Length: 104
Image (tube, rainbow, N blue to C red; front, side, top):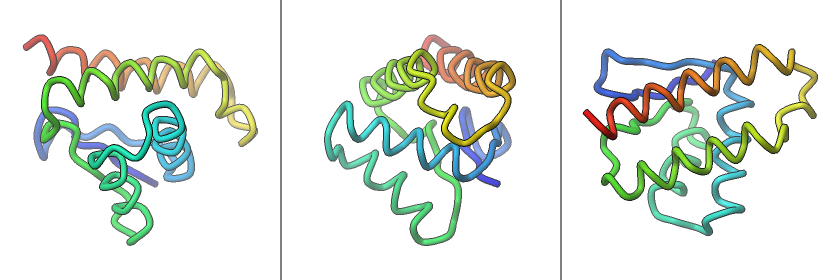
């Protein structure tokens, strides 16, 4: 299990750690070795399996939202054999929650 703190330490979004790690690697493949993405990846490499989106700058958060949307569109996560629609719904929930923080 992995977790992303969206708005603060109490607003937690969770999914399989493998899915979140793959999302982060996908974002790195799109955007390069941005410091925040490497920090996210390190959090999983070191066994913490969580990171805080609310600590990002507005522009980094916008980039992460955009990259997450591209990940949904790519269907890259289908390689894990998860239910496609369920994963799409979970990831869309994450995007909606991050967008609420972004515009709030």
